[in-house]
Image 1 (cartoon, rainbow, N blue to C red):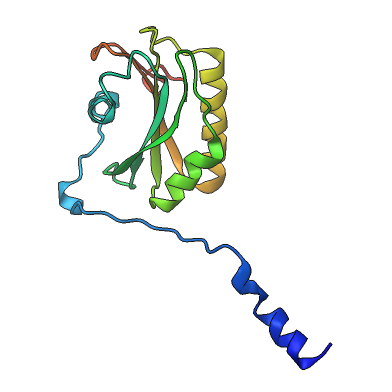
Image 2 (image 1 turned 135 degrees about the horizontal axis):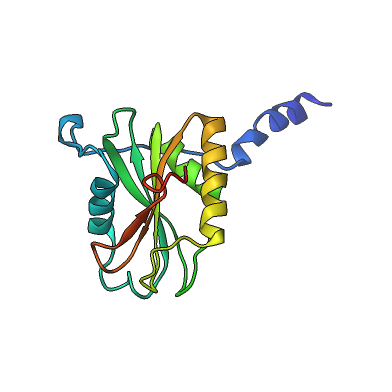
Length: 161
């Protein structure tokens, strides 16, 4: 291999995609809300939901928390149709790691207004919990929201975590 080929090969890494991780916050730690129970989480999550879409589009969101259960941020994981959305566990933890979260709360809405979890909801909750255990990121709750503010379901409150 010639010297020119060695130099050219050494610089081939410049053709690879650049990966950036970013965590940008504009909220002082003292001003972050604390999650003490499922009602606190439900209230904060509903504030981030588009009130016009909660009855029409199933969406999965996540609260990112630090060890003291202070909210670091909220992110949308996926949006689907009337009866479902794809929840990719890898995306959940990609966001959790980028956001420096130690604890997460996953939530999705049921446009039907029925807050009962489906078999699919239970399976994805278990997958998220297992993945979180491997990464040392606790799944604190999975909440199912409806357009009626007082009707929601908390997996943690039901002892399903």
